[in-house]
Length: 141
Image (tube, rainbow, N blue to C red):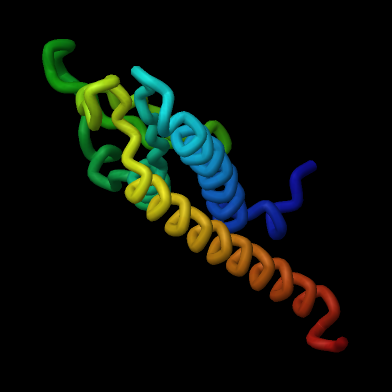
């Protein structure tokens, strides 16, 4: 049985964010490794908007229903347990004559941003677990 305290939605959100940041790190490193490869197209990983949608599901969806199959479908809420980040190959832009679209400065900035996000998420996770430890020990050290 899964413990509802330690595996709450908050910790699951941090876990999925950390997983997504790790995937983004791999793709940024791959983009940087292929900066001089002719024809290489950079890959981008996005997940923040999807996680935001999972946190704030559409409360109006419960009030809506389809009376005709031609009506637009109601947006499905995202289940955190099955969440996966979106990985997209950017092929529309061409940065150089050889067809490569990796910009070294942009990828380096994304790498720094991703590292800060990772550090922030690990800090949130460690503070959450420290709070659980304090609660378990009844505030005693």
